[in-house]
Structures are given as structure tokens and as C-alpha cells.
Length: 337
Ligand SMILES: Nc1ncnc2c1ncn2[C@@H]1O[C@H](COP(=O)(O)OP(=O)(O)OP(=O)(O)O)[C@@H](O)[C@H]1O
Ligand SMILES: [Mg+2]
Image (tube, rainbow, N blue to C red; front, side, top):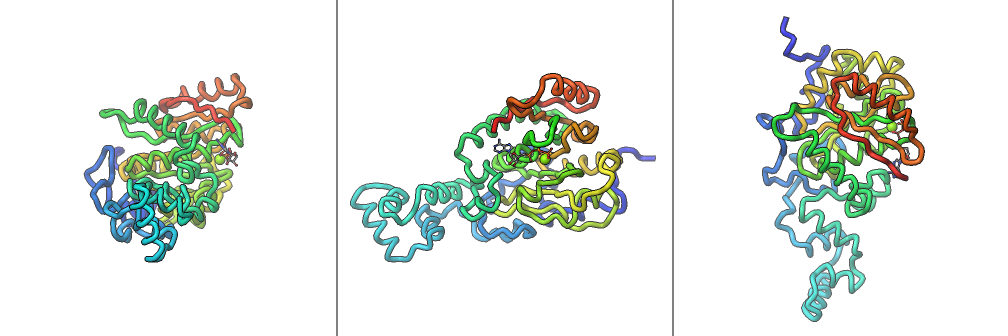
């Protein structure tokens, strides 16, 4: 018997990953999974959900704000010339001149700057399609700022050198507390650090991550756990080269049994060798012990408590349940909305 070598039923985890993930993390057990100067991590405007990061096209690092703005706003040569003239006359920056002439908005300039700095930022059409991704849609807003503060805390508490690698299960007492919203946006800010980040939708009761990210949900975690052969079920988030989602797929009739199977723990271990950060969405604790079981397999749990709604006694029960698992309690996030 060799208990250390994880195997999933009928399937190797390599086969469920997009190509570039399989190639990516070899020999890189900590920290940043890319940073190889080929444009990974940049905001890409042509993602299609199933594509590979290798078709990213030319890196944006050496593109000027002018050329990025001209592309975003489809500016012609004559308009660019007008902006340049105004820029010379007023001694302003290209973006400021474009705004002054009404040829670009402040938002366009921010979007271009985000591209220059390799900072994932959703273009306008994506913002309308995925309004819940506030960290991607308004990366300079209050919510994104709070998410980054939480990210810093997590980095200090969970991801120190020498600590075992852990996935983070996002748990809460009730439906509607904001687990799905928070898990998705936490993953975005983790991905903005540059490492490969995966959201696993382990809410096999009411899965919603596919909706939040606007990706397909034909197959996913439930298929893997039942041993069905599901190729490339982990999907890349359009526009964020290093962010991936494993949706649920078919909603199963036996959600608790599926996450209790050894296959789930083995899958999490395999995924932690492929991704720098793994964030796992769970069903509300009021539905059963799924979330505690999932947290135990992840190694860490983060509790979401909805402000002015969560009851202290319920939160205490949830924390007491988690304390009986090997999961480290990373903290409690008060979600106010
Ligand atoms: N901080 C927030 N700001 C704005 N909207 C939020 C926030 N948190 C949650 N929401 C919204 O509240 C609703 C419920 O949130 P969500 O689906 O994340 O809850 P949940 O805890 O995952 O519920 P369930 O247990 O049923 O899956 C969603 O429409 C979500 O967009
Ligand atoms: Mg949810």
C-alpha cells in the first residue's frame, strides 16, 4: 500500500487542466507561478474562456498609454495628432489631453494604465456582464481596497514560508451571507498578485461561481468526484490570464457524500501543486456539514458573517465545528452590503 501517492478515480488531475497550467508550475512550489516576462498577468481583451495563456499576443509592457488608449477608443491618426498637439500646448500627459478633448474618459485612462502595469481590470462590456466581480470591475474602489487588506492578512497568516500549502474554504452560517461573492473577489485580488489562482466551486447544492464569472457549467467538480472523464473542466477567466475556475457541473443528488469521498481531498492536494492559491466556495453551514468537511480537506477556513444578520451563537457553533477539523481558522470577515 502506498498512501502517499494520490490518485483520483479513473482520472489524473492533469487531464482536467487547461494546457498552460500543466506546463506552468513545474518546480515552483511557492509564490509566483509566472513572471517570465511573456505578458502573463496582463489584462487581455480577447479571452474566450477556453483559450490558453500562450496565445496572449504581444506583451503590453512596452506599449505607451497613447497606443493603448488609441486602441481602446479606436482613435484615428488625426485624433491622436490633435491629442498630441493639445499635450504639447498645455504640457499635460497624453491621457489628460485626451480627456480634456473629450476623446477618452477617465475610466479609459485607468484601464490603459492598468494594462501598462499588468493589473487585471475588466473592460466596460465585461463589467456589465459580470457585475459581481467588483475587484476586477472597480479595482480602485472601496470594496477592492477592503479585499486587498484581507488578502494581506491572509498572506501573513496562511502563506508564510515553511507553512504547509493550504486551500481556503469560504464558509458561513446562512445562505445569502456573501460566500460566493467574497470567494470570487478574493480570488481576483489573489490573482492580481501574479500567482496562479483557482476558484473551486464546492457548493454542490446551489452552485453559482459559473454565473459570477460568466463561464460554462456543463461539467466540473461533481463529474471529477464521481470518476467521470471530464477533460479541461478548469476554465480560464477571460481577461485574467492567471485566474481559473472549476465549476460544479451537474448538480448532484448526494452533495455531502461526494465531498466526503477521499477523491475530494486528493483532488485538493493535486490542485495545490498546480496553483499558488486555491479558494473554495461552500454551501451554507445551515444545509449540513458539507462546509466543515470541505474546510477539513482544504486546510484553512475563512468565515463570512453578514453584518447585522449573523447571530453570535450561530457563529460560535460554526467556529466550534471548524475547531474539530484540522482546518486552520484564518479569520472572520464582516460582510456589509
Ligand atoms: N459585499 C457585497 N456587496 C454587494 N453585494 C454583495 C456583497 N456580498 C454579497 N452580495 C450579494 O448578495 C447576494 C448573495 O450573495 P452570495 O450568493 O455570495 O451569498 P452566499 O453566501 O454564497 O449564499 P448561498 O449560501 O446561498 O450560496 C448576491 O447577489 C451577491 O452579489
Ligand atoms: Mg454561494
